[in-house]
Every structure is written in C-alpha cells, then in structure tokens.
Image (cartoon, rainbow, N blue to C red; front, side):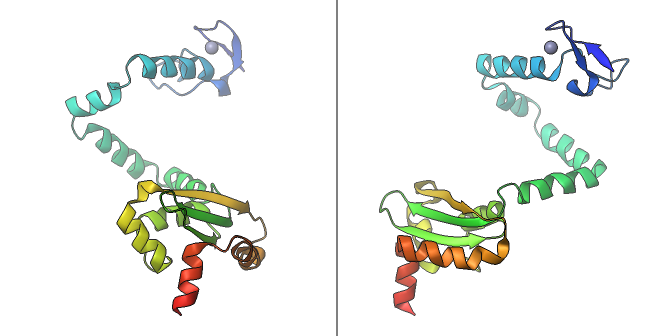
Length: 178
Ligand SMILES: [Zn+2]
C-alpha cells in the first residue's frame, strides 16, 4: 500500500511512514526521510531545544520513558539485546592517550565489555589499567576494536596472538607482577 508524503509529494510504501495515533490512518503526514531531514534542520537551528524542554518540564521525559518501558517489556528486551550484541565478539585495545600505554583483551560481547571497563568493574579488569583510568580519567582513554571474531571459540587464541604481536604495556606489567 502507498501513501502520499505531504512534504516531498511522492508516494511511498506505508512502511516508510512512522506511527502517529492522532492521524486517521495512524501514520505521520511526512515520510521517514522527510522527517529525518526536518529533525536534522531543527536540531541545527535549535541545538538546545531538548535541554530547554527538559528544564521547563522536569521529570516528564523520564516519566514518559519509564511508562514506555513498563508498557513495552518485550520491545525493551529486544532493544537491550540488540544493544548488547551490537558490536559482536572480538579482540579490543584500550589506550591511554597521554602515556600511550595499551591494554588488549577479548570479549564475546564487546559492547558490554566497553561499558564495564569504563565503569570500573573490577572483576574483569586489569589492575594496572584500572588504576590508570582512575588516575587519568576515562576521557583520556581510547577504545578500539582490533578484530571482530564470529567464531567465539577462537577468542582466546586471537587475544594471545594480538598480545604477542603488540606487547601491550598494561598486560605485560601484570605479567611481571605475578
Ligand atoms: Zn517525503
């Protein structure tokens, strides 16, 4: 089924329109790409709009979000799962951009590992790296994916390969301490 976009005046499949329950057909007047351009222009013209709105309407945004989560548990789960798996598995490097020191590790869920490192999850982290992040602040560290690995059975092997090749400082210090 097709619908006319009131902005670009083209007919698009109805899947190219977002929902708008107030409209008779339940769809927005503008197609998704026109909406995207409009939103983009608006953000450039009024960059502080969102923050201003939040200040004028304290707590409303988070309440809307909480309600949405409560009413859409399946969808929320799906989004969280998609987020968790979004970077896949692989070998990564964390680099102190002041000293150049590096740490190399591997994870089945790179996206989660990234968050864990920078929120100080002591269980998974290298003590030297952890101390260094505490000292310099997380903004002075870069996270880089060295290799994405589809077959997670190869993770350990590939991690060893990268550590042997790059000799990352934080990993090596730990080795000497033990
Ligand atoms: Zn359009």
